[in-house]
Length: 253
Image (cartoon, rainbow, N blue to C red; front, top):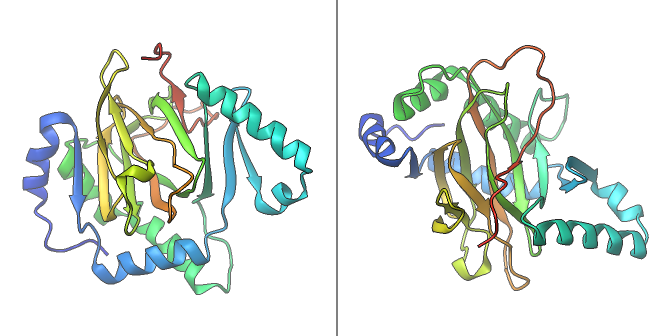
């Protein structure tokens, strides 16, 4: 799956400059094309958002059963949290052990995750990042559409040993004015620079970087598609609570 023409040593030199990097043409072209197609057609997305400091993943069938007033109240709570620099809203399909399915497209999406968690890619990521203690990866397919966002945060969670965050972007024809940018921030919380979604691009960055996904505009004409997660070391036994996004506790600018 990995593009055999990648120069891992050259990428490692680039990563060392700022502990972040974008790698174009990361996977073989045929694999990238299938991901782009299948994550739209077969990924079983759930609506993911924050409520009272906890992560919620709501199935689309459950969402459809909510009344208009319930949906309005839920959206109001999500937007109020977002206005304070807290929370997130997007569609996500969590990876893990692939269950039995007759959907070949869905099986392929799980095979991609297994590759990201396999020895060959883990070895390549160790070489690029210098993080020799990386032993595994986790991931979810995400789809950001108009109104979705992910506020400022770091990806550091005690006990999880997240070493490097990654976003494999599988988005075609994205216009930066549509939002959905991977935005980086300085330590004082002020904006630094941003990376626009693209096709077959892997973004890697140390989990200490403050970042967000900017609000997707109502006029966005396509979904922002990606596979994202963390390359990890050994998690600390006894720490079970998973938190996808951690507030930075920075004051707004």
